[in-house]
Image (tube, rainbow, N blue to C red):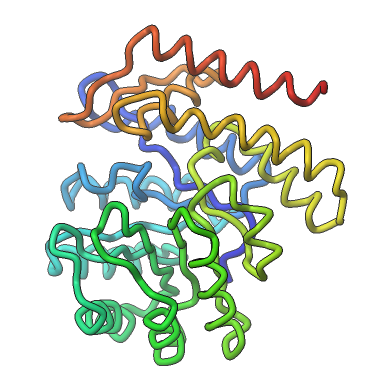
Length: 300
């Protein structure tokens, strides 16, 4: 159901930490105009952990209206308060969201048995397509291929996974385990540079942060792969590889992604919810240099 190039959108804020709705609309339109297949709001890069339930509902309404069914809208509903996670999931259903992305409860990472109960409870009560979100570096626990298989076999509305594991073998094992019996189940990589190897392994694409910065680069890569245009695939993959440096430029990687969107021409504030350390001018110059260097690779 969810395949191709998906963007976990940044949440654009003003200097007071409030939603900048006009800039959010401009960013959404830019993503769609450049061929993105779908947008996730309140993923990790979207700072889902930093907003109240009411703030999230406000942005859900805004994004559904502005996207206006041009591409699927996914909403990350993860959190540590299960009642609030359920409430947001039901709200998304009423708001005509296209799907939910659910990450494991963090801090106390659940055992496999607890995780199976947790995800199963949502799948059994919220009538929307569900994408599992595996990010063990942040949650403290891993959704194993065996667990993903159990959930996919038992709940037909669990239709996809974003596997943010810096080890393509983990993703490959999920693909091989689940798709043998559920070929409709889609597997997206959370690491930008894994698009090609994800597809070679039988996966379906990426849901990754750099698509905020260079959406056309990723949709060009996707089109080239579909058409077996290996020269273009190589050029795009080299650019992606260079742009991966952006993740190491700031205190929180999401601040660097916001700054890179600004460097590309959308005049936004790179403000990130505190206690994050805010962007410095030196970091911004470095980010601009990375983008310029990546663009020069096209000419090589």
